[in-house]
Length: 179
Image (spheres, rainbow, N blue to C red):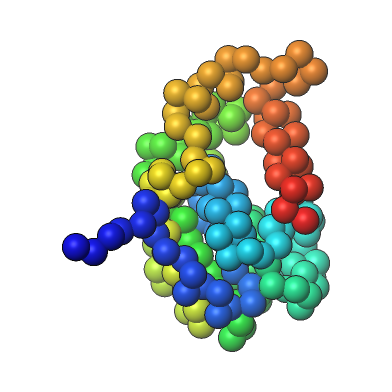
């Protein structure tokens, strides 16, 4: 009998110096970036650490140590970041879940449809591409199920005024732990 891991094996990605995780905003790209950084024992680099859409800053980080970069904001610039040692990973998640997440986070409706971004991804000519489905990692230790996420939203700490502030504070805790 063959045993299957609880979530996909990503060890093959170690051959790339840089892994840039992209996809639709609210598709779980930050979660997948954290998972990959941990599983591959790489530095986690959040968008906020490289100026969100500042390509020169990303290129500088890419020239340093091996890392996994959270980069949905860099989607339109992927060709400028392409190279032999770079793997681009697109996170797929059902559009209805992305829409729900956008509404709950206060973002509202995104300026593009998830289907449009996925179509652009399929047509991009990049040297190294991979696809990951968000729900394939439901058994990863970092996964927080929907009931727990709902409870988190209901019980915001007194010093946090919104879910967005809570997410920002939580992300910085992750950044500090990963760097």
